Amino acid sequence: MKTSLKTSTAVFVVFCMTAFAAIGFAQEYKALEGVNTVKTIYDVRTSNPMSAMEHLTLVLETYNAPAIQKVTDKPEFAVVFMGPSVTLLSNDRTGFTEEDRQTLKKMDKVISDLAEAGVRLEICEVAANYFKVDLNQISPKIERVGNGWISSLGYQLKGYALIPIY
View (cartoon, rainbow, N blue to C red):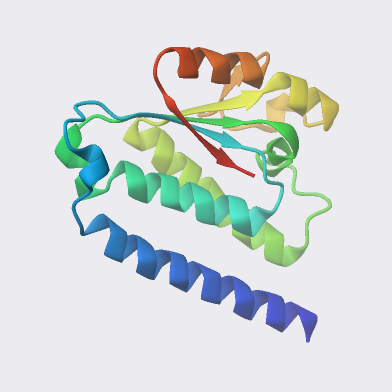
């Protein structure tokens, strides 16, 4: 019973996010008037597989959104995985439920699509070490950075807007 409620809730959330995203991407944004570059860093810290997958899907949809592409055909997006989110990136899925493993498999595809689109992906080694994540089990599409805070700081000092995903 709890699993079906959890699954139903997750499906509903994904449906709502997709519906609202489709509406949002079709409109004009006054906030983008006069903007000629799009530089964004996503600070990902959630350890919930469904939440991470949904948010990363929205990052990809945002990257490809007509409103963003109207500003620039080459937006600069970076995703930095810090804190407990690093546990979701390992190819070793021991300790995850079967449902979470399926979600993480979908998330792997989204991460691959993000990398292919040109979005920079980084994993914080401090967090990986703290959470005992074997960096050899991380996709080579995700760049290793010693300290995610320093990387985040660097992006922000270069004018990237910070969007937290907690």
